[in-house]
Amino acid sequence: MPLEALPIDQLRQRSSTKWRRYPEDVLPLFVAETDFPLAPAITAALMRAVELGDTGYTPPDPGIAPVFVEFARRRFGWEVDPARIRWTCDVVMGLVEVMRAILRPGDRVIMTTPVYPPFFDAIPEAQAEAVDVPLRDNGIGWELDLDAIERAFADGARAILLCNPHNPTGTVHSRASLAGLAEIAKRHGGFVVSDEIHAPLVQPGVEFTPFLAASDAAAEVGFVVTSGSKAYNFAGLKCALMITGSEANAKIVRAMPEEVEWRTGLFGAIATVAAFSPESDAWLDSLLARLDENRRLLADLLAEHVPGARYRLPDAGYLAWIDLTELGWGDNPAYKIFTEAKVALNFGPMFGEQGAGHVRINMGCSPEMLTEAVRRIGALIGR
Image (cartoon, rainbow, N blue to C red; front, side, top):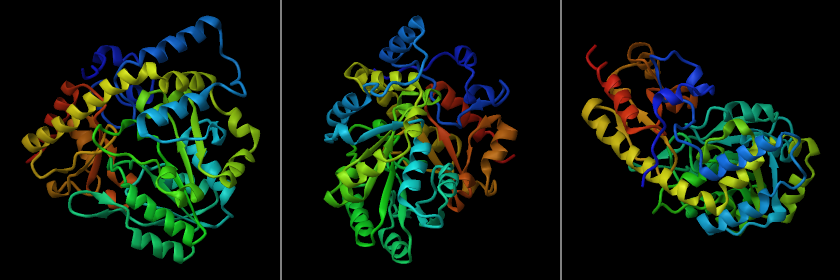
């Protein structure tokens, strides 16, 4: 059965960004938080910790590695060496620490825009320079532009910061595309740093390939950073995993300062173990069923209320990338939608130049909220 969202009066009692940034007359469909109850195993583990006053420092071995190994095998058919897993505060911090470890100041890093806005800050934080190689629209979806990526590496780029599954488009890159990317990076002595935070949210029937599992070359050149925080909605608890596929790269991660691991939140580690345990699989499946219904509902709602909107069903996640260029609402249509319809969406230009005329909608909510939001947007047409 599809997972049901919590009632809106209960959601408005939350103190997180989604529910405290805007007044109550605004429907918040922007930041990547969802409106569902936590998986019961996570709730039980956190409640037990509170009862015990278990609020100290994260231990040297919080049990993350073995439970993730089994999760990766069970959900993705991916064999991970537990000795090649280390944890840290969150995915962006993990990406930055990996880039600091493999790059020299001033090295260039490829981004595939439109892309998750913190990438624009993470690369300079690692003292590197961003190189934009946009995704290619092939008419039915988006894909890596391997020819352009090859040229960027040949021109001196040292690494690529990959988003797999991709945010904001929801694209799941094919195994062949990832293997091709790995060969390019290997040929030029480069690296691939892959953000795979949305991996648990790949829809059934869509084949997800973790970058490190794409090929032998991918295992040699790649680093994966992931977390349960997006799928299981505990971003505030702070825990991410850094995973490698070769002993050489594992040594790079192990050589990071101890403080990188100490930044992991204890509640984040506890929630991560509970999330990736088999006890949470049924909850995740029900979430995916709800998101499948919502992504299809959104297509119907846009066709009915916002003709001219262009939208492709995402392969993964609860984020929808919508092209509103034909409506003539300018480069940043989310601003008009916010001020006139009282619906908060992510501003398309935040995702790069390719985001002009676009918005990102968070579908991790009830069908009723999604319906009301699209109706409000549709009411602006002709005004």
